[in-house]
Image (cartoon, rainbow, N blue to C red; front, side, top):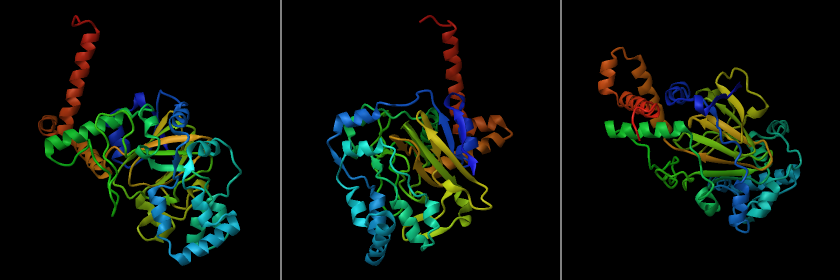
Length: 372
């Protein structure tokens, strides 16, 4: 596994981001100047510490709900034997939980947890070992819409999109105006075969209703190694603590151990313990408070909390398919020989040139060229 590339936000231009990471489907950790947002937990507790919340995301509920009664019964027995709790007890511990009680657990170290690799070595059937690995995670408030979790706290705990999110969003909007082809702006990411999330609000610095909150303690994990059903690139902004990620190019999925589960794309491998032989395009890295991870939507991935009281937000600002089209167009433009022809026909080139002109004007003003 290769380490995920890291770059300071001040050194990351939109052109570099698109040509080196977005278009090549490679992840990137963006190091930002803000640092830790240590007041987020206090804001949540002050606004709604006494409120109750279900910790299981819609996807987890759907996943467990599609178990046959026979499989659920067998798995519950396995859970009780190896984990000390039945499936129903596990569900109850994650249903209707008071936020302030959950916060105490997320802020504690907790006992050491069995690793997915250790569970796999029990030599039980692949599906059962994967489910046991998944349910061995401590309670985790994960993948829940901010609009449904203490919305009042997030009106003040502002999300801070990176500069490249704003630039690419503008370019996609410009592309729509110039060509009539798809859109950024207000859009609803739609999972395969399901209803879309509420649309992102244009021009808002607060988390949109479709932004997802993750909050938990060491070892907490949402899903096994999986591929998202959404056609969307993701940005994970870590506010407090740290989170570990592993990712694999989906074109190398034949090197992984697929688990058949209707409607879901999941794999059995424990990439936190090492990569399978022959894997060439795999990445791993830790994202800490004050950093933001860019993850192309096509990547197979898993995430695990690495620090006490980790809180992060997930944004999905544009469809992955549209972003990849943008990257291809920019690369074609760079290879174009006739720059005048490019200038005349490329909406990307015109957008870049307009930005350069505005920057030159601003520098002229700053030098005292215009009395204000």
